[in-house]
Image (cartoon, rainbow, N blue to C red; front, side, top):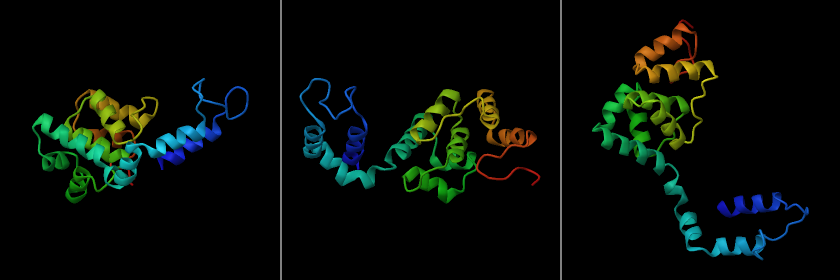
Length: 171
């Protein structure tokens, strides 16, 4: 997969002359670069292990947060209002969370704005963007240290989609 990505980049990127020239005066072209990368020990490792490493980063990160804060995953899942089985799957890396589930986890952990943005990045999700009304409300609630219940009430008051669901109160 990584080799294909590099080949795609190399084939699409042209130097200022408009041809597939060498890399910045190194004398190497895309063929020597690809050959070197393909023979590298790290490439073999990533090729062999990519299936097992896919979700390890996020689950490891949230497990580390639990340890740092002296919390147990069960408590975080409960405070996050995430179904228990699904929450444990997030912690052991067998499920990928949606953006809303990551935000719910942020409330469960009691994270501040900066920590929440980092949690979103670790999960591979877009950060909260204050120009979007829903994101602005969530950012405000996090900054004011509101819990998830209070945040859901405020989202409802603004007739915005609740975290963790595609519905609004009253619909």
